[in-house]
Amino acid sequence: MNQVFDSPWASLGVGLVAAAAVLAIWLAGAGGDALGVISFLVRYLHVLSAAVWIGLIAFVNFIQLAALLTADDQGRETLNRLLVPALLPWLRHASTATVVAGAVLLATTGYVFPTLVYGSGVYMPAAREALLWTAVVGALAMWMFVHMYMAPSLEVIVGLRAGDAEAKARARRRIGRLARVNLMLAAPVLLAMLAAAHLY
Image 1: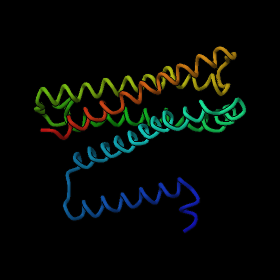
Image 2: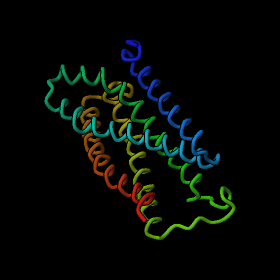
Image 3: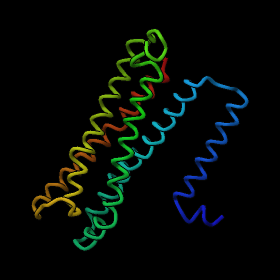
Image 4: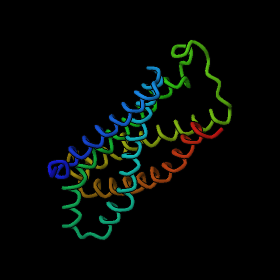
């Protein structure tokens, strides 16, 4: 049992097995069509990866940047050496998984290419459609900030890209600003996405 608690991967694996068991029990009792199950699983991945992404945004803004502001040079170097290389792939992969799963979800729910999936158009009120596409544009902007600006700046800070002291200072300022922009966008993007799916 200790092996489950000694490794985050083992703990996550047990959680995913439990989730799969709940889904299997539900499907055995209630049934479900293949497209509906696929759409649900894609939505589950979309929500799970978005939770990780938003969690990382919160971590960067409220914990990491705050710690870096109060740390001395040695503490800053230690944090950058230990934390940033581990944080960077998680930020990239969580944002990409969220966007890709969201794009697939748009297709499986009939918001894009409805005639290919359902054989006919899918009606969506104009207000909900506006909310949905506002959320899509906002999420894509957040993804772009991560991949095109934040990740390269983080690489400069930890030495994966060339940069002198001034380049590292510029990279820190850019990350601070874009981390705040992503934090500001997270709440309205999440609200618009949920409202498009659940408000009637």
